[in-house]
Length: 165
Length: 103
Image (tube, rainbow over all chains, first blue to last red; front, top):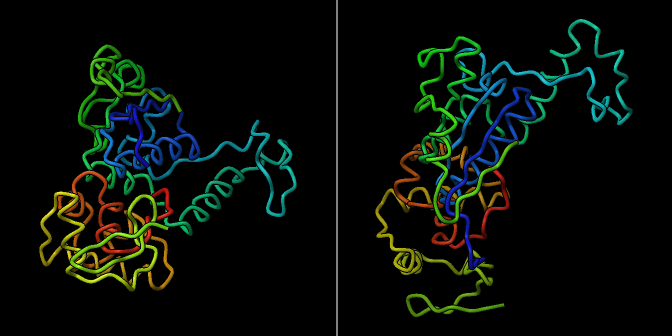
């Protein structure tokens, strides 16, 4: 498909750390890399969970206050069930199983794919300061820790788009 | 349906130039399409194209991740061999439809 104004650069900000938020970011980012689009990914606040060593493959999905969550069979999952110990782990485990069936990789492998294709991963300086993370706490996939101003500098240019997931 | 002539053979392609009939493909045709994409094919290119064609013929979904399990090359090399959009370019050059996959 020839477009008159193709997207040349994609800059994605991930500020949340649940499975669905992080995967939305990773799928958009990897998809852009696969299309040959220059890709910058910026992780901030709870989104940092996706790039902190030892945490990235252990993300969970929220089972309390998530009105879209359904039980197997399609019935809505009552919020009260969500407070049962282990329910969040179980639900997250099920979601990861479903994703694995579709050949969706674990977060660490997703970051491998993205960086292998030249995509860049960044952490947010303010969020790192807030949660006491240093560069060495973050995955080796991470190029740098940036201020918001530095992020905007990176994101500049014709045909560049910023996405907040 | 559109047609194109590569290496003296007329083949069926869709609007984007992807083959609609993979059996019409030959290595010589692959070399010509690669030229259009600015790529000179080496043995490594052909090995990965063979792998993709084989997977396609079995009806399997082609993903960037599956390249790592090809046993031919890793994803990083794949991006180097087919710069830009490797899965799209490799399938176009290899005479199989554009992968309908998000990963």
